[in-house]
Length: 299
Image (cartoon, rainbow, N blue to C red):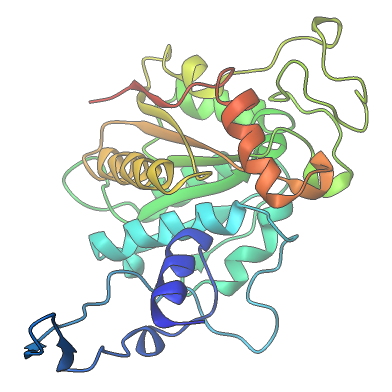
């Protein structure tokens, strides 16, 4: 694999364990070519690293991606690390993960983190922010954020999320939505779209099972919520937009405006019974139409 391929995969795939130095192999300082007149010219080119493994993603001897093949939760986490690195906030961030497919990812990160009971990250994050918070803008620092799945956030954790929003806690909630209970066998979750097959709705979800919950739209109605958005990482363009949403959410917290929330649509190929490529196409064709991307409330 050449250097250009490695860089492209590192950008879209999230983590390949490729150290930045390995991506810096420059092109020859002088490359000669001949034209139709037989003359030889030299092109002087300089190559610049534009993507690589974030410093906060540690290189460990065991598998650097503790998730199923094709899972996009590491890709979504990569977007978070990109933003923290861009803002220079790695040393001021405290991550509060929930329980789910993403639970092992924090142990791969060079970030302070505190594990939470299932569904309770907003409660723990609120306590951390209130106890350790400092700064003029409503305890702007440290930057405290949760990392949760859809089940952790809006099923068992619905009460914690809603009450944190009602209290206008100055934290950021990040929900990785793979539209099923990925850790326990792919059962229907509150965010499963209509028509989507799960192990408990093999014929596809119908209104008989209720309707999917659109979390950012719901939170946008709360006075205590300052920012709510939904992104995806199924294409490079959506990845970049999601990065921007996460950055705005963090900036909202640092400005002391209240709770901020970003949902990120992620694929789950094993539980969807699809190839990784087909799962990306499914997100575009069937999930995004029911869960539109964009910002639903902002400063």
